[in-house]
Length: 135
Image (cartoon, rainbow, N blue to C red; front, top):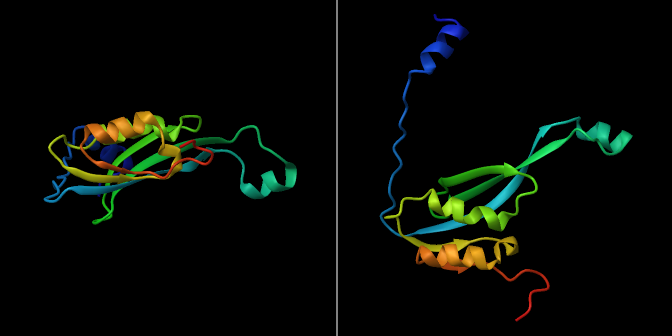
């Protein structure tokens, strides 16, 4: 049985190509983001002692096919990056020949930039208006 260092050395030359099936019907995407705590004290200590200065968060933006629950695009950003800025990058990760039927997201994606990116892919935007949006 090879040890850890031998496996790490061999992994550098290993090329893995995972096949990604192309959808036969147009995809219905669901897009959202979640926060990931990368470094910092536990929640109990923060609750007891107050706000921690050393806690770092990142955002994981995910696009999921609504029918197959397959994750089709991901993007990891800093916590100050707005959700709407990342949507065009998520759509670029999809193959251009893959047809999109719709893109569903929450109100954070109700921006002109997002609607244009969805329109360029000839898909329907299923995004509710933001709170306080004008008609």
